[in-house]
Image 1 (tube, one colour):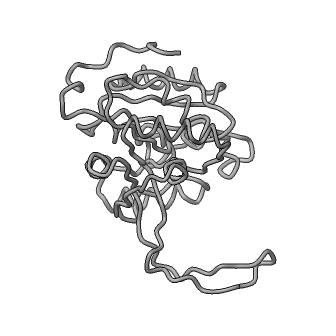
Image 2 (cartoon, helix red, strand yellow):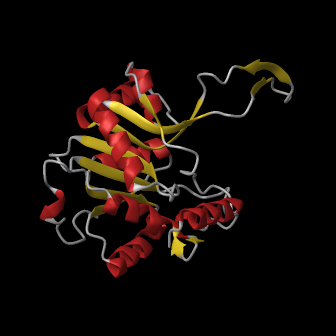
Image 3 (spheres, helix red, strand yellow):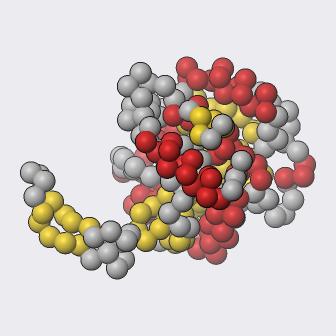
Length: 247
């Protein structure tokens, strides 16, 4: 469903705006709702999750376009929502696949040929900020691949198949990875091809880069960039929003 919206404003095609963002909203949300209601359409402090996510990318000066990847059954809802709110950077809406990896690949096919960097972001990670996006993009320009992340502060245990502790793992070099995950466009294309050729199933895009042998720079972006996975995460997100003083 490419080009269903007006042309992206020329204001976002300057030399400083070199990032195409792929926002993934095609998951089944089974952990959030037993009825399959999309968590991206849930309300967080008076706004839909996906609206808050898009607003951050709209406000980020290095982002020139946004590709939304959604479930087929949600397409009309996203069309209506985007048109009502008048977002300027939405290039198109793409129907996703059965896995996150397939959805990201489908979104990648629709980004501008002129883009330098591609950012993959979870639509349910609605507390991302323009500053986080820009910071990760800066590292990606330097290192070809970078991801938002935060260092682990809890003690980490490895268990056996029965849930018994096997050993304690040093947390010195342990991180939890977030999104956006941002890559040089050509590198990302090659990583996709490598994953296809080797039948690699990746749970995130960094994993595809790792499989190709590419180092990915971890960028400390704090603990507030949470992902809405369970209904209880809504309250946590709203608490963060209140603490920030955001609307």
